[in-house]
Length: 258
Image 1: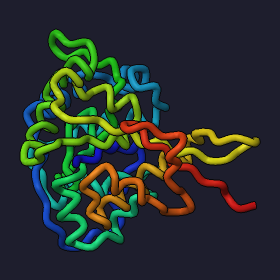
Image 2: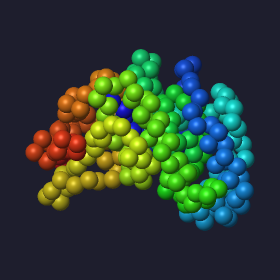
Image 3: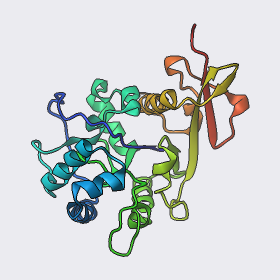
């Protein structure tokens, strides 16, 4: 099974990571072409394209300028340790053991607007480029068109050894839309996380994002390799809700104390 995650807008290149193995992203040439296009944009154009403040636009223009096709310890770090949003708070990668990171390398994929697909230990340079960005590159008018079937083909390769390939989607819809389902040769399972509020269960964005990270952590630390074993997920009060679930849509619910 392969677990898909979205990237995060927040990045952490300050916390020490220690001596860990690293790999190189698989689509460096495609990323380089995107960087070329981004370098042709003014800070004002980047701000408008990505709906950013002037300060954030300037930061990212500087990032594009500094980006290099050579990934080193000085300019990059492992993707799983570089992202720092709600999902990655739940995943808490810095507390994973080396054996856990090794397992994650083969079973977790992070979708990315700039890098296409990242493995957890792929070195990543800081960037901001959301998958939904309408960036024109050559004859393509957005990143979905730019990446085309490449992302799904990459996932197929990663799943090639599985007799019954399964993708567990823990990514947002914005990112999962980048996976061409006509190309993907795997069953897709969606995980839904609901919290009790105002007399009913509902998806609360902040909690759901963190829960996706918690599910990824659970899968990594328990080596979850079958859909059935996903049902055992029980971190931070969540439990499998069989009655609300379908074979390819697993629902997990919790009632918060208080």
